[in-house]
Length: 245
Image (tube, rainbow, N blue to C red; front, side):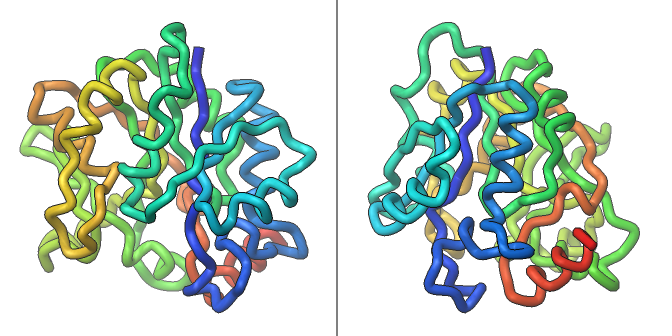
C-alpha cells in the first residue's frame, strides 16, 4: 500500500497574497486543486494526508471540502523534514511507500504519481528534472536544489540553492521536491535530520544523503520541466498561467 502526503503549510508571502500559498488562484482555481485532482485520478491513496499550519488549517479544509482528506497540523514551521515527521503515527504497518508532494506544484500528472507508487526500494526514490539552461521560463528553476551525483553517476545528495557552492549552482539537474520513501526506512531515519544550514530548517532533501551514506541506491524517475514546475512568486504564477494556455 502507498500513502500520499501533501505539504501545504506555507504562507503566500512571496506571492503577495493573504491566502496560504497552496490556495493562491491559478486561472481562478486554487493551485493545490490541480494536484489534488491528479492524486485522486491516480487512485494511489483514497485519503491522502495534507500537512497544514495552525493558521491555515480551517481555510484550506474549507477550500478542499469536496476531497476526502486527513489533515496533519505542523505547529511550528521548522522545514519540510519536520513537516513529514509530524505525520509519524498516521500510517499502518501495511504501508509500503510514502509519497511526498507539494501543494504548489499544479502540473504533476496522475501517471507520474502511479509510477512513483510502483517503485520497489530500500530507502527512497526522487523525481528530478534536467534543464537545457536557465533561460526563458526555465529561470523558474534556478533557485531550486541541485542533484549532486558521485563519479559513478549515483545520486549522493541534494544541495539546496542557499547552501550550494558556485560550482554546484552550475548543475542543470534540479530537484522539484517529490520523494517516495520506504515507510520503515523513512521513520527509522528522519530523526537524523539536522538544522545545520543557512535556513536553520530540517530539510527533507537531506534524507538523500543519509540514504547514500548508508549504502542505499537513490532511485530516480525523470520528469519533463513543465510537469515539475512549482509556483513561488507572482512572476512564476504568470508563467504557469501561460503554460496552461
